[in-house]
Length: 82
Image 1 (tube, rainbow, N blue to C red):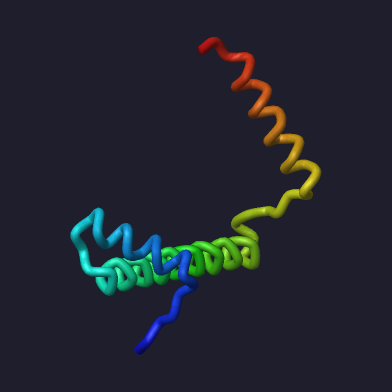
Image 2: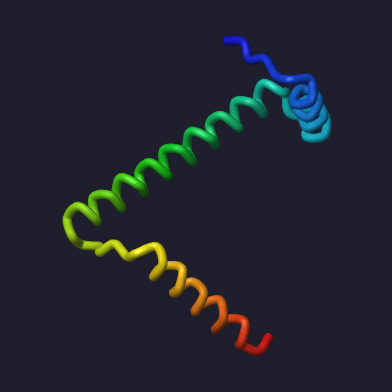
């Protein structure tokens, strides 16, 4: 398989390979593996959350309500001494 990068991305990859001592092919492979792992985790989490909503184990809340709760938590944290 061949992968083509813009000159800017290629320069970053070359610099990272030189700095780390790892071949650029290994860096790309590690990045792709990490991306797929993150994608699988996100998909698994979303599927689980969807199942929770469908089964009724979790009740959805309105976006305005979620925002209000977030703002309350933020304000409470700001009021706490450092």
